[in-house]
Image 1: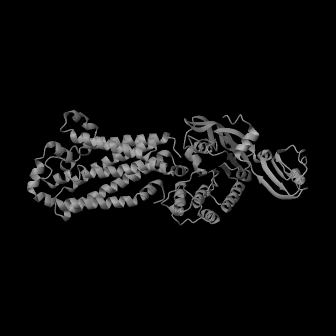
Image 2 (image 1 turned 60 degrees about the horizontal axis):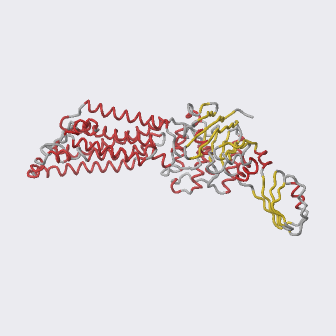
Image 3 (image 1 turned 90 degrees about the horizontal axis):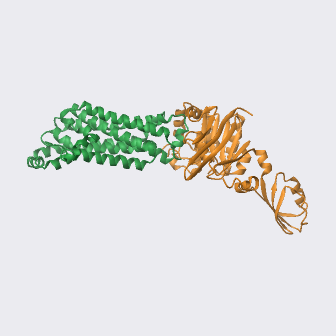
Length: 265
Length: 300
């Protein structure tokens, strides 16, 4: 794994990736274990379904308890899964160059015959692969859980929503990478990226009820992530395109910033 | 002189509030050990970081091996070994893993040479780096700079944190490396070190070049502080005829003076008297600047 920068970056996150994978698999099993109890609690479902739209939009979508897909769309795919993917992505993206710059190891790394774009690309690719592995483990966990607890869910739809979650993660991975490449400051990158996540999440969550916010919904990555309720309706191609476009824009920005930066010692 | 390896012209870097470098001109030739001497904060590290393209100069040009340091940086670094002044290694790796990783990034590495260097510096490569002392980390830093036998080795304050025995081993390694025709660019704030290992030296102060000299010329101009405690009364005018001597204090049994160049005549006069103690101290850099280059460089 020490044969190149890509391998070294992947090696560095092997333990955190293992921890996150175990956590996500456990979460999948837990959610599917509790679903039948929720499903049987008909009265509770009625109460939840009768909540005001404002509350329902904040915690998820409408008709969330009627089907396994509706339940999973609420929990974990409305808040928990995107949040976990974003936390993982921002932690990795902001550490890629800014973390190494702060720890003072970047000088020694760049003393080797590497181009600067190569450093950014190899680190990005390794972290994107880690995020992909996380998505794969999550899918395996959920698919195995539905099989184990005899819950009928369309596994292909699960692939689609987790892919959407992966793309959302990539957006925040490249955003935090770009801010790290611009500033060389890991905390700054984490702060700005997290702030962006919170603000755009709230815009997307309130937009259906608040007239004035509605036009701004298209500026939120969360709208493209699950505005279409992917688990029920499938991926929206144009949404995937927008998310991929954002990833490319942020990645190009990261390459541009890092290439012209005066690295701190 | 050999071919030019490093050439800078008017290299300047302005950090705004912090001091950078101003109009640095350096020319280093193949096969020489070139010292870059200056006090801490003079701009030595800034110059090196510009040369390696970690930071970009505001003005001036520089080539290494005749290649532009901006456009051909990766090609240059392929042929350069570098030891940073402030060394930070990957703490979670062992020394062996770190060296293996850097060999892989370079595409080659001579493990028998690495083992030889590790044994010379008594360096334990199998231990995790986080468990090593600063001195032992420094040894790994030195090995990674030399291991691929590069054409040019840039060392920023290389003996910081090395104990005297390892410093001696390091000076031997420098000599062997020069004998192989490799070029060494070595920054230091330590005059005796530069005098010991370098062929030529550039002196930098407050970001500006003060002079570039042969080390032998520098030695001849170096003012040494000498104190002698005599065991008998001496004649007060015994040393007065020497023009390379500046007497600071003299009573009948104590002489405090500054001495430039050869000491032979001075020692022969002193030896006529009974000597109890003799102290000779290298001047520090500030004293050199004051004694040789006057106050005009002070202002810069």
